[in-house]
Image (tube, rainbow, N blue to C red):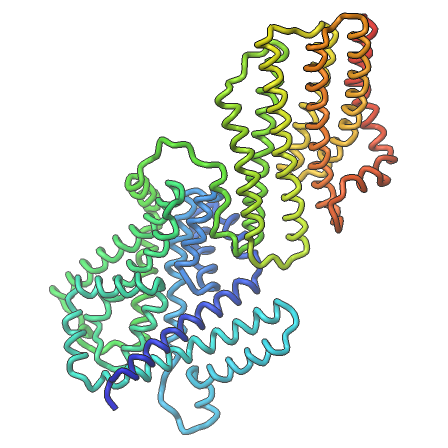
Length: 594
């Protein structure tokens, strides 16, 4: 039977099975490993050799250099990996991706006549592996067991897809036009373009190399035709990283350029070197038919050789990529850490969201000082900067909240609790910003009206601002570092702030009765005291969420925490006494001087 429409349909169907099997197996392996792969990749990139090894291992596991490179682009875009660190991972990913082709060389082979030996051949064993995977899937109750089922099923379907492609292209061996086509592709430039084009379309070098391996079973593809195509396939795989970097930071785009330059320069060097040798000395195998093993070996040889060549010159790759994507004058968005590529990896997505919420805390703290410092003779606040900060806090609450609610595959109870704690905390940090804005606006109105507080009121207000500033410092530090010991110091001081508020209200009413303060200044004073106490309240909420998360509380309930035994412990009493002496004593001193 000749090569007809049915053969084309079978070829496309086999490719679909191949890609599906490769993707299913890769995702199963990735999920079975949990978030350890990504977390390890993030941390173990201190030197280029370690980064290379990690890139290679991760790519071997997830069966896709494109996926690894996209992950790295995401790390760089989020600021948790530098451009220099990314180079080693990319080099390793290019080696790791060759494992698929080496596995596929095992498929095929003629029957031996021995049933047992024939069953052990990969193309036959694949059906048994799929059967095992389906059985595990049907009886599995745990997610981890289903992940193992995906590994078995994906691995088997990968080989079945390869077998279907091989069967579909078998009739091509008898077509002289097919041999003529690959004779034409022996032109190196045309071969590179074909390889790059096909790979760019299907966005998988492993799949395009698999197609070439399937076509090689016809015996019509020579080394001279296959080599340029393989080099082109390594260039075409860069399209995925390019697409991933669109809209990212300059360093994310530079990371994609590193990947591109590695494969482009490597391919050019190989082409020049191979054809120089061919035209001077000549390769004895040049016009021989290439098989699946030959394709896999050249694919591996290319990436290994290029990695060894480029390893001492990673700095040059970084400089080349940096020159290709010049620095931008615009300031980078702090919320760029909310990397969409991490949404399928909850641990990474939650880490990035936490960093953004910590940025909210720092921004709220800056606005607090911008609002309160001018009250006591400090330089007038830069209104533009203040409102930029407030706009960031408002936007961050919306965008971080949206990001958290779109994280996929959160199966861990601890991760669900962490997300709940973040949702509470980001709302409280935004409200702290709102109360700082209230103080800023009231202080501005106060100055414009030419009003001033009495010396006693000013000293009391200064003391309360100092106490709230300390509460805010401890809250932000405790959240940023998830430091429970720091968070535990917030509640005793918050109680002192509550006491201070009531005492300041009473004392100010007394001053009004003695005509030491006017009604107009009194309203501003009480409003600012109220806003300061509210900031302290929200700091208390955040600190309690931090403590409850660390203690494994089932629910985040600030009232329940405040009522629990902690308030009766010696540690709480000791801290409460310390802060009473530190701040309430100052209030008493002001009262004594009147």
